[in-house]
Image 1 (cartoon, rainbow, N blue to C red):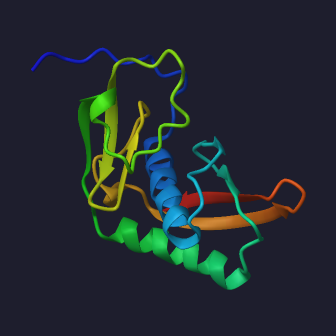
Image 2: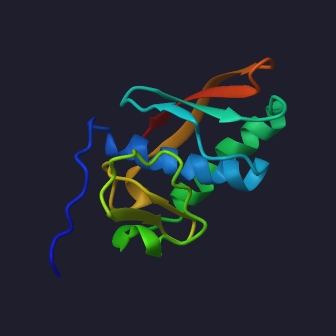
Image 3: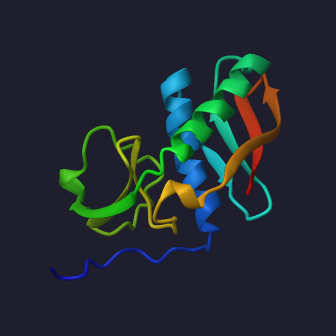
Length: 155
């Protein structure tokens, strides 16, 4: 198969943290019915994601998010890639972050049967390489309806 031409990636993520972000995004979609993170800053030491929510999650919900993400990580799911033309992207894949100049061929990243999204970033090969996910702080902007959470990974 001919190697598809993709857009260049503008940053170098820490693969375990970036893969954890994918799992977190899908967990938020499943728990709250919200879109994937609208703003994310992914770094090796700690990361943050913003979600559009009608209300601040309760402390019990925050613990549940952390628990569910760690459950997915513990399943040792494979992280695989597939290349598709834009017109062949499954309807559950949210393309809102796709740049205007994105290539006709897109790379979809699949984490077992848990998550599927278009992404050109770097990822681990298996969720067993991620480590333990921990939410370290969070706050809610009630004017903008944005919940910001910060997280880290540990061995």
